[in-house]
Image (cartoon, rainbow, N blue to C red):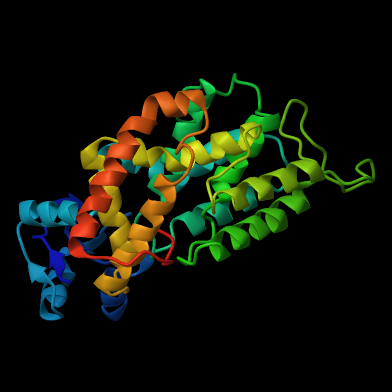
Length: 338
C-alpha cells in the first residue's frame, strides 16, 4: 500500500492544488487524510484535493511525491479511479436530481434522497459506490427501453413495476458492510423505514397535512413491501420465472458482469480494494465461491434483453476470472459478498 501525491499544478481559488490518492485502499487514504486534518469536503470520489501549502506536510507524513502521470497510472491500476465520463453522473447533485425526478411531488422525499446519496458516498466504498448506483439505474433504463440518465421533466412519473425496480436499486446497497445476506436485509429494512413515512395520511384533508402533487409519485403500503422484497432478492439474484420486477432488478445489478473486459477488470480491482483488509488467501476463496455460485445459476440474466446483451460476455468474464483464481489455489466455500 502507498499514498501518492502529485505536484500542486492545478489552479483554483487563488492557489494551486495537488491530488492525494492511495494505490490500494480508500480506508488507508481516509485515515491518512484525517491524521493530517484534511476534511472530507476535500475528497472527490477517488482523491483528496490538497492545497499547495499542505503538499510538503503530506510528503513529510509519508506520501510519495510522484508526477501527475504516474499518479494516474497507479490509481487506474488500483481500480479506485473514477473515469471522467462517470464523474459527473456520480456527483451528489446529479444523483439528487435523478432521485427528485423519480419521486417528484412526493412530500418529504428529498430528505430521503439526501440520506441515500450520503450513504452511497460513504468513504469505504470502492465498487459499491455512486458510480455503481448510476450504472445499475442506467442498465435498468436500457432494459425498460428508456434513455439512461436523468429523465426529461416531460416524462410521466414512473409507476408500478418501473417505480418498484428503480426504488429497489436506490436502496439495494444503501447498507454496505460487506456481510452477505445481512447487508441486503438491512437495506430492505432501511427501505421500509425511509419510505413508510412518505405514505399519504388517511386524514390528508386536515390542516397542516401534506398533499400529494397531481401527476406526481404516489406510494402505498404494497409498494413499500414490494421494494423491500426486491432489495432482499439481490442477495441471491434468483427471481422466480414470472417475477418481472425481480428479473429487471437482478439483471441491472449484474449488468457489470457483461461489460467489456477492461471494465470488468476494473470492477474486479474495485471489489478487491473494498476488501483490502481481508488476507489474500481468504479473499481468493470467498471470491471464487461467489463466481461459482453465479455460474451455477440457470441463467445469469432473466430478461430476454439482458441475456442478449450481457450473458455471453458475462460467462466469459466470470470463467476467465475463476480460472485465474483456481491457478492461485482456492477452496470452495463462503466468504464476504463480492
